[in-house]
Length: 201
Image (cartoon, rainbow, N blue to C red; front, side, top):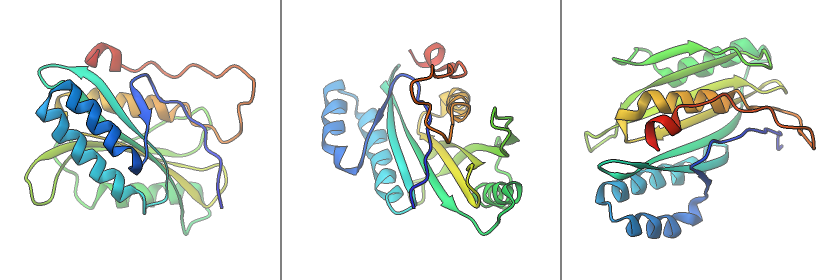
């Protein structure tokens, strides 16, 4: 069953799939940044993993940054069926499972007020990559889909830890554009401003 979800990404994000890896490698090679190439390679590995986790949309973020040359991130959106018809319970349990039993240092857990009034929770913090010791930043949002018992999970992951606050703002802004009916020809409400242009451009 395919459930409708509409949303808008800010400038700098490009829709991708697992088959786009070669093209993205060419882009980062042209930029001449070994660190950016390493970051993008790791993100594309995560994209391969997402293919089996109900993902319905993925995009890569490429923004100018110094001294790396380009700052990379991976956006994902997935729709999951839950065992709970109550949307508040479904969101709360999904958010708790994503956050883990113990808060990590510097982690964020907070509820968001959406125009739809559907329950929504944001979780953000740094995580360690198994086997490498490298840390990446990940911010995720879980909200109820208009059709119970489904939830929508949005994620944004980047190795650019210095832009963690900006990435949190970006994902929150994207979440505010979520809709479950076709906007059709009506003017799309402007997305909440994000600081991506102020921080990365």
